[in-house]
Image (cartoon, rainbow, N blue to C red; front, side, top):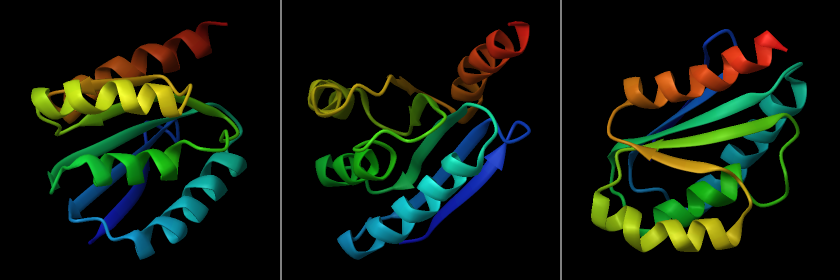
Length: 127
Protein backbone atom coordinates (compact mmCIF):
# COMPACT_ATOMS: atom_id res chain seq x y z
CA UNK A 1 0.00 0.00 0.00
CA UNK A 2 1.33 3.40 -0.80
CA UNK A 3 2.08 5.71 2.08
CA UNK A 4 3.23 9.24 1.47
CA UNK A 5 4.75 11.38 4.21
CA UNK A 6 4.78 15.11 3.52
CA UNK A 7 5.77 17.98 5.78
CA UNK A 8 3.29 20.86 5.44
CA UNK A 9 2.63 24.15 7.26
CA UNK A 10 6.34 25.07 7.28
CA UNK A 11 7.29 21.69 8.74
CA UNK A 12 4.87 21.86 11.66
CA UNK A 13 2.56 19.09 10.37
CA UNK A 14 3.57 15.68 9.04
CA UNK A 15 0.80 14.58 6.67
CA UNK A 16 0.47 10.80 6.39
CA UNK A 17 -1.46 9.93 3.21
CA UNK A 18 -2.32 6.25 3.21
CA UNK A 19 -3.99 4.29 0.40
CA UNK A 20 -5.36 0.76 0.26
CA UNK A 21 -4.48 -1.79 2.92
CA UNK A 22 -1.46 -1.38 5.18
CA UNK A 23 0.62 -4.57 5.31
CA UNK A 24 2.68 -5.37 8.40
CA UNK A 25 5.99 -5.29 6.48
CA UNK A 26 5.36 -1.60 5.71
CA UNK A 27 5.21 -0.56 9.37
CA UNK A 28 8.95 -0.55 10.18
CA UNK A 29 10.12 1.64 7.23
CA UNK A 30 7.30 4.14 7.88
CA UNK A 31 8.12 4.20 11.60
CA UNK A 32 11.83 4.78 10.95
CA UNK A 33 11.15 7.63 8.51
CA UNK A 34 8.62 9.17 10.91
CA UNK A 35 11.04 8.99 13.84
CA UNK A 36 13.80 10.60 11.75
CA UNK A 37 11.52 13.50 10.71
CA UNK A 38 10.37 14.15 14.29
CA UNK A 39 13.90 13.86 15.69
CA UNK A 40 15.35 16.33 13.17
CA UNK A 41 12.60 18.92 13.67
CA UNK A 42 13.62 22.04 15.61
CA UNK A 43 10.02 22.48 16.83
CA UNK A 44 6.85 20.54 17.66
CA UNK A 45 5.48 18.45 14.78
CA UNK A 46 1.80 17.48 14.66
CA UNK A 47 0.55 14.43 12.75
CA UNK A 48 -2.28 14.50 10.21
CA UNK A 49 -3.22 10.91 9.33
CA UNK A 50 -5.32 10.85 6.15
CA UNK A 51 -7.11 7.51 5.77
CA UNK A 52 -9.73 8.61 3.22
CA UNK A 53 -8.25 6.37 0.50
CA UNK A 54 -7.32 3.54 2.83
CA UNK A 55 -9.26 0.43 3.73
CA UNK A 56 -9.94 1.42 7.32
CA UNK A 57 -10.21 -1.38 9.84
CA UNK A 58 -8.99 -2.04 13.36
CA UNK A 59 -5.62 -3.44 12.24
CA UNK A 60 -4.90 -0.35 10.09
CA UNK A 61 -5.65 1.99 12.98
CA UNK A 62 -3.48 -0.06 15.32
CA UNK A 63 -0.67 -0.09 12.73
CA UNK A 64 -0.99 3.68 12.35
CA UNK A 65 -0.76 4.02 16.12
CA UNK A 66 2.41 1.90 16.09
CA UNK A 67 4.03 4.24 13.57
CA UNK A 68 3.07 7.45 15.35
CA UNK A 69 2.70 6.19 18.89
CA UNK A 70 4.51 3.62 20.93
CA UNK A 71 7.81 4.97 22.22
CA UNK A 72 7.38 8.74 22.54
CA UNK A 73 8.51 10.68 19.48
CA UNK A 74 10.69 13.72 20.11
CA UNK A 75 8.89 16.99 19.32
CA UNK A 76 5.52 15.23 18.96
CA UNK A 77 2.33 17.25 19.19
CA UNK A 78 -1.30 16.55 18.40
CA UNK A 79 -2.59 13.71 16.18
CA UNK A 80 -5.47 14.44 13.81
CA UNK A 81 -7.08 11.51 11.96
CA UNK A 82 -9.25 11.92 8.84
CA UNK A 83 -11.29 9.34 6.95
CA UNK A 84 -12.61 7.11 9.72
CA UNK A 85 -16.33 6.38 10.00
CA UNK A 86 -18.15 7.35 13.19
CA UNK A 87 -18.73 3.68 14.02
CA UNK A 88 -15.03 2.85 13.61
CA UNK A 89 -14.15 5.90 15.73
CA UNK A 90 -16.42 4.70 18.54
CA UNK A 91 -14.88 1.22 18.40
CA UNK A 92 -11.23 2.23 18.17
CA UNK A 93 -10.91 5.46 20.13
CA UNK A 94 -10.94 3.83 23.58
CA UNK A 95 -8.37 1.25 22.44
CA UNK A 96 -6.08 3.86 20.89
CA UNK A 97 -6.30 6.09 23.97
CA UNK A 98 -5.58 3.16 26.29
CA UNK A 99 -2.59 2.13 24.18
CA UNK A 100 -1.00 5.56 24.22
CA UNK A 101 -1.05 8.96 25.88
CA UNK A 102 -0.89 10.64 22.48
CA UNK A 103 -3.61 13.29 21.99
CA UNK A 104 -5.84 11.90 19.20
CA UNK A 105 -8.72 13.72 17.48
CA UNK A 106 -10.91 12.61 14.56
CA UNK A 107 -12.08 14.90 11.74
CA UNK A 108 -14.27 14.68 8.65
CA UNK A 109 -11.86 16.46 6.29
CA UNK A 110 -8.17 17.34 6.00
CA UNK A 111 -9.10 21.04 5.97
CA UNK A 112 -10.90 20.68 9.30
CA UNK A 113 -7.93 18.77 10.76
CA UNK A 114 -5.41 21.32 9.47
CA UNK A 115 -7.45 24.17 10.93
CA UNK A 116 -7.44 22.39 14.31
CA UNK A 117 -3.67 21.78 14.18
CA UNK A 118 -2.94 25.36 13.11
CA UNK A 119 -4.34 26.54 16.46
CA UNK A 120 -1.57 24.61 18.23
CA UNK A 121 1.04 26.00 15.84
CA UNK A 122 -0.16 29.57 16.49
CA UNK A 123 -0.20 29.00 20.26
CA UNK A 124 3.41 27.89 20.13
CA UNK A 125 4.40 30.99 18.11
CA UNK A 126 2.63 33.27 20.61
CA UNK A 127 4.84 32.11 23.48
